[in-house]
Amino acid sequence: MSRAPITLKGAQRLREELDNLKSVKRPEIIAAIAEARSHGDLKENAEYHAAREMQGFIEGRIQQLEGELSHAEIIDVSKLNAGSRIVFGAMVTMADVDTDEEKKYQIVGDLEADIKLGLIAISSPVARALIGKNEGDSVTIAAPGGSRDYEIVGVEYVG
Image (cartoon, rainbow, N blue to C red; front, top):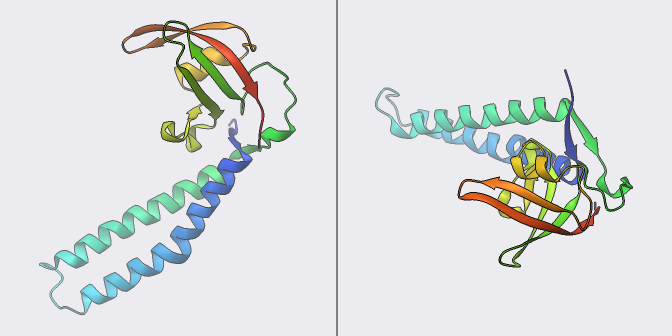
């Protein structure tokens, strides 16, 4: 089984989430279940059923995070020395050839990807199109609205 790559920063963020789930959310939900049980009949107790459903979600997320983190290959991006070549962990600035609009993305592991934060998964079409390219290269990315042409204007590796 191959180990999924994840950045050091991403692994820390996931460990913090795991710690929060175990030390804060789990005790809260246990207390909520105890409170709902004290109200009597469990068959028609909506609070109890909602709390049990939330407990299942939290326990599932804990298992997922523990499993993913135990099988992840943690990569310290700041120690990569790829120059202007794009590899895992690169922070890429690209300019749309038609509109000159700039976008900045970091290529990260699948588990830590979050487009709102500018973190794109290594398995995404955008990342796959960028991997192996260099600063100054042009790249065409297939988008739902049609192909878009970009020029890579910057590549950096920051932790």
